[in-house]
Length: 230
Image (cartoon, rainbow, N blue to C red; front, side):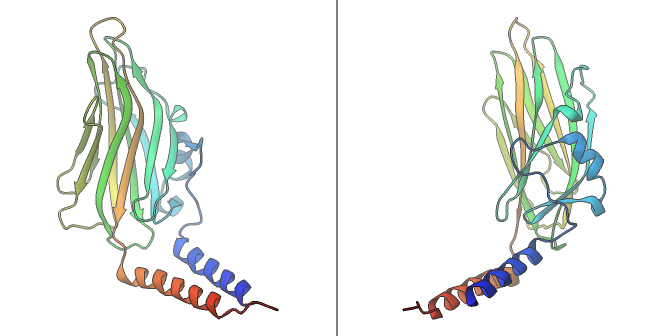
């Protein structure tokens, strides 16, 4: 009986901590399509949740260097990246060009804390792709109002970038990822970005830590007090 009550209590506590707008971001492979996020998670009231983060206001546009073959929103896969305090989001698409071609896509969205507190204090940008011989492939992540923005990552070596917010913290951020690839001058010189990943770290407030620690100690005590039946 005690075990059942403890399980129900734990579930209710964590459900309360995780509750937001009632929508969960797609978090399992193969994930969801950007077109679905654009249609279904347009406003804060429609924000979807992953861990301690909310995501909403998705959009896709072509940059000024677009070559006309950029992937559509229905060709870009979106996957939430789970974590304790550094939940992120990943975009997988077909940003690949041959020699002499270019692509320039801009993905925008907003990210915020479930708690509503100003706890976002750093961000990481990462890319995965290939670059043969010449050409260029990279991503630029702009965080509105953040000191030190934008973040830039480029193939073949600088595939990730990190920024701390210099002591500033935010309850929400506007995020813009520009993915730009240019093929080389020779035949077969392709440029390809397959994954763009954004992670955001959230400082854990002391009361939240105390709740987690206290819940763990309570659970441990209940289990220790339970005597085996003979």
